[in-house]
Image (spheres, rainbow, N blue to C red):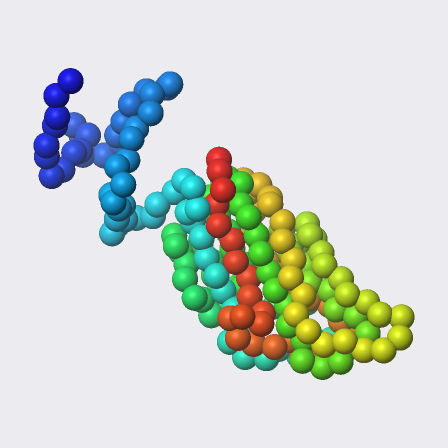
Length: 178
C-alpha cells in the first residue's frame, strides 16, 4: 500500500462526517503523535473530563443534603462543567466520577454523595457512636450518562463547614467509554 501525505482532509461538502477505516479495522497511532482540538471538543476515551473545586468554605445546614458550590475549575476538557449551577452535563457515554468532601469541624458524621439528576447514585458515610471526627471523605462511582443527565456533588452532616481548596473538596469525572 502507499502513503498519503497531506495537511488537510475534508469532506466533499465541507461538512458532515469523515470516516477513517471500517468495522473490523484498526487505525494505528504511532508513538509520539498528539491530537489537537483547537476548534470544537474531543470525545472518546477520557474526554470530556473536568475537575472542579470549592473556591471558599461553604457552611451547610445540619441534616440536609446540600449540593456543594463547586465554583472553580482546575480544568474542563470539553466545557461540560458549569461553575454557576455546579453541574456536569456530559454527552452520552460511561464516566468515572470522583468526589472528595473535607470538613473542618468535629462532627459525629459526614456524608459525601454523588448525584445524578438530583438523586444519589453513590454515598460515603463516616459515623461514630461516640466521639467526633474531622477529615476528608472520598466517594466514587462509574455511571452512564444519556446526554441530558446532570451530575453534582453533595454533602450532609451536622452544622459544619465544608473546606475549600482543590485537594480538600473537589468533584471530577472523565469518560471511560461509549
